[in-house]
Amino acid sequence: MREEPRLRVAFFRPDDERTDEAVELLESLGADPVPDPMLAVEPTGAAPREDAEYVVLTSKTGVELAAEAGWDPGEASVCAIGEATAEALEDAGYSVDLVPEEYSSTGLVDALADDAAGTRVEVARSDHGSDVLTDGLEDAGAYVHETVLYRLVRPESAGESAELAADGDLDAALFTSSLTVTHFLAAADDRDVRDAAVAGLNDAVVGAIGEPTRRTAEDAGVAVDVVPEAADFDALAADAVEEAAPTYHE
Image (cartoon, rainbow, N blue to C red; front, top):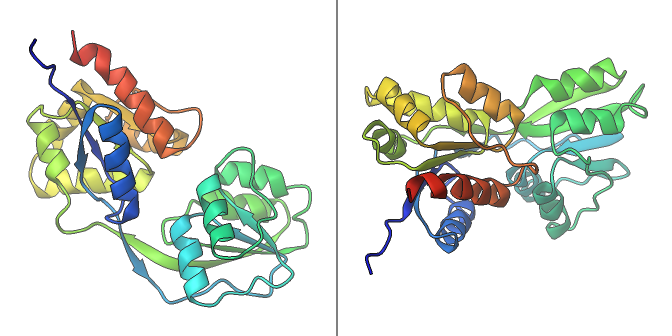
């Protein structure tokens, strides 16, 4: 009996343990992973301020850098966007006081809105954080300070997936942030395959981890087929593979 070919699925996580975990997951789902890191971390050496009443961390990377810098939250309430960030805080020995039900900037603003007025809120994150968080907290009456813990840059080697998409050799692509979409398209530009890569994505299954990522993709002409209910890579991968498999095996 002839073995069915496997789905070729691209993803764009940083080249660290997150890539290893994604490869393992996609292989367990019966797909051939195509790791194409679109993000590399450049730490700034900064640490969150220690004089705030609320401190907001938005990523596992930010938590790790804050811990390396010896950050002490003192009496501040520590807020995490998403379970992965909360777990990283707990692993680093910090208490987590708030995780919004909706894992997004809007979710956190909604969770703090009633208590934020007149308080100092420290937001510690990357240089590509959404204004939705800081503007929303300021609109709620908070005094907001933002500390950039790290910059997110595009690795020079990025772009294999753009060429595969341009050649029609991708079955699915998993975008985990608006910036991964932007960097994918920039890599395609660098390789002079942008139009063909977008066409290739539109013939494949495209997954976006949340609504902001979906909007960024669709504004660039990339149709999004899958947005998981939870902003979680495992859910994104599983939903995209499930969506791609019926078409692929026709």
